[in-house]
Length: 566
Image (cartoon, rainbow, N blue to C red; front, side, top):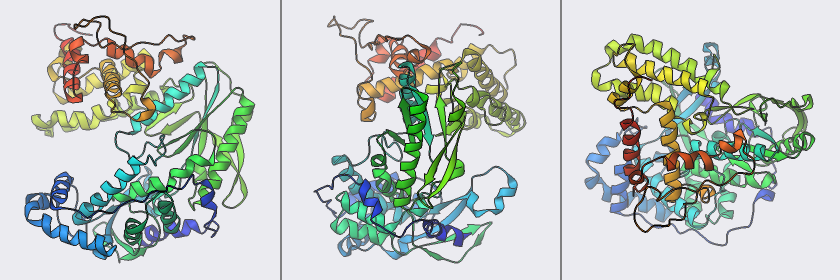
């Protein structure tokens, strides 16, 4: 298995041309500014050690807790080691050895024998993580100062998230459907993306983006001569060298991958939304839409080949979003494009529902599949969880019951609630029933326990209020410049006519929509504003997100008191 992980990048790259020049045509203007590699200090290392997560050890078996307890003693010694490495522009070989833990990502038991069904998670030494964080801080400061990353890149970035990526995509789809446009989503999957990053191309791209001189030399050293061993069922493999890819589980790996894939935006005129490479195309008619889908796919195949990345044909698909009762022509059920890697024509299928960042997007955006599908739906999954809770609840200490609820129930309901909260009331009622059932099981409440009393006692938001709460937090972040720039102009406050505090202060203006349709009413500019404007003035006036969240939650839960059942 270790041999498979170490060689997968090179094996996949054999399908591509050895010409390294093709990638360069996608790069934009060269940055005429160089990054400066500054040495570290005792204070910087001391602070970074304090941020280490208490996770599993790497090959040094030094737990982060130990480092935290003695950071005063070791900070100056680590400073000497790291600054010596910076001065010599050489990354220590002992910090480049990874312990690999294969993570099974399939569901069928018979697929366990295929190494391709495992994701290799690299466990690196705690000391290495400290050094990587030092370099990361210098890199990200330079990247942010020069606005190097594509604005629609949501992956591995501060104040970006999968939820925000989903919200941006859905709002764009609804806006275009509301304007009577034809809309398609194109979903690309790269095979072993992190493992197949070509070091030569990466180094040249870093140089293009201004990461030159000492920093570039050090990063090349960081990538060179990396080694790993794999542990399966307690058995350790031999150590092998890795000549391709960036390490998963590292601090620098995701950032280096973002820079590697950053120029994908230049392979097509259509807007790409990046957590993976996903494009959303719009057209006035279906024939034009089909042509655009084919063009986007063709261009993505060309870009991936030029950058020695491999697109998984079987996992690549597209969806046609449409209004209810709209008929999509049969000729859009599949498209054929040329795979630039081998110049063969491949067929890409249309899917009525596609999983995007953990949420199933059905073509009518009614969230039916995500909520109700017998296999993948959220409601059937919660039914299975509740059945399990009936068995294990007797073994859970009272102090841990809420932890269990948050881990297995609340986390599933809250993820993407900004989206699925707009679903049909019948669906949401079913979801509410599952939430109530989970609470009653875990906390040994009678079936007849009034719903509102239950939620007030346990201080748990009901589904409808969790939806409003999440939207209101989103608005607060936007008003306080805590969201990516693409959301900057989403909300505008109502012009205040009074200098003193009134119930009308700090309200959000709801723009008049020329076409009042189900899609226009579900735009976040509308739903967010409604959720915000419903809150009391003292909640809207909160100065920090923490205070706002506390006051808003108290407001919702306070309404449950004395209201009986529901």
